[in-house]
Amino acid sequence: MKIGIVGCAGRMGRMLVSEILATDGCELAGGTEAPGSDMIGRDVAELAGADAMGLKVGDDAEALFKASDAVIDFTVPAVTAGHAELAGAHGCALIVGTTGLEDAHMDALTKTAATVAVVQAANMSVGVNVLLGLTEQVAGVLGDDYDIEIVEMHHRHKVDAPSGTALALGTAAAGGRGVDLGAVSQRVRDGHTGPRTAGDIGFATLRGGDVAGDHTVVFAGDGERVELTHKAGDRSVFARGAVRAALWTKDQSPGLYSMRDVLGLA
Ligand code: NAD
Image (cartoon, rainbow, N blue to C red; front, side, top):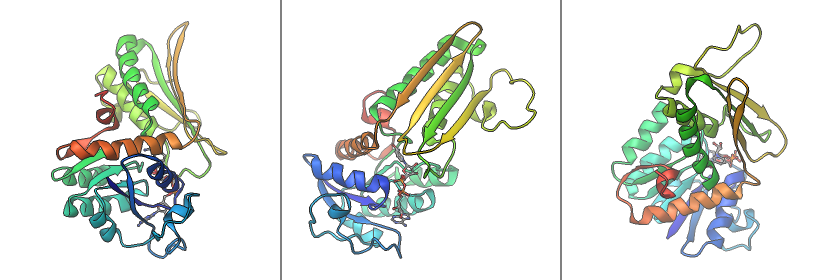
C-alpha cells in the first residue's frame, strides 16, 4: 500500500516515515510540509534518520493524495480539514491523529467519510484504546459515588490542553455513566472554586520535558480510590497504530472509524 505523510518533518511525521519504511506491505508515497517551510526539498527518508531515497519533502498536498492509497495526518486542525477534502476528491483513505479537532473539523471528516474510509483517533496506541473501554466499564460499575478526575502529562511542546486522549477518556467515563461530557466537564479550577460539584468529571493538565503521554483516570470514593493509568514510553506506539490503521483501511467500506474499530475492540 502506498502511504503518504502530511507534516512529514514534524515529531510524529518523522516517526511515521520510519514506521512505514520498517513495515512489510507499505511503500512511502511521499511527504509534505507547510508551504514556506525550510524542510521543503529535504529528503523525506533522511529526515526520519534513514538512508536518502530520492523522495523530496513537497508542499503540494493534492499531488500527494493523488499518489497515495492512504495518507496519514498528524498536523494541525485547520490543515486537517483541507486534507479531508483532498482525500474525498481523490479516493484516498485518511488516517487522522491530529488532536484539538473542533466540530467544524469533525464535520469535514464526516463528509469525507461518505466516500472513503477515514480513521480518526486522539490516541493511536493499543494500550490507550484498551483503557478507553476499561474507563467506560469502571465508570458504569462504580456509579456517581466515585468522583472522576483525569490527569494527563505531555512534553513541553504540546499546544492543546487537555489532551485529545484525556478528553476521549472523559467521553468514555461520561458514556459509562450515561451522561454527556459537555454537561459535566470541569476543565479549569483556579482561586476560590467552592466544593466539588457532584457528578463533575475534572481534568488536570501537566506539561514538561519530553513526556510522550501519561494519562490517569482517578475514581475517588469514600475510603478507596481506583486509578487506571497508561504511560507511553515513546511516540513510536502512536506511529505503529497509525500505520496499522492505514493498512486496515484497504478492505474497508467508506465510513468514519475509530482506533477501536481498527483493533477490533468496538
Ligand atoms: P509537530 O508540530 O512536531 O508536527 C506537526 C507538523 O505539521 C509540523 O512539521 C508542521 O510544519 C506540519 N504542518 C503544518 N501545516 C502543514 C501543512 N499545511 N501541510 C503539511 N504539513 C503541515 O507536532 P507533533 O508532536 O508531531 O503532533 C502533531 C499532532 O498529532 C498534534 O495534534 C498532536 O497532539 C497529535 N498527536 C496525536 C497522537 C495520536 O496518537 N493520535 C499522538 C501524538 C501526537
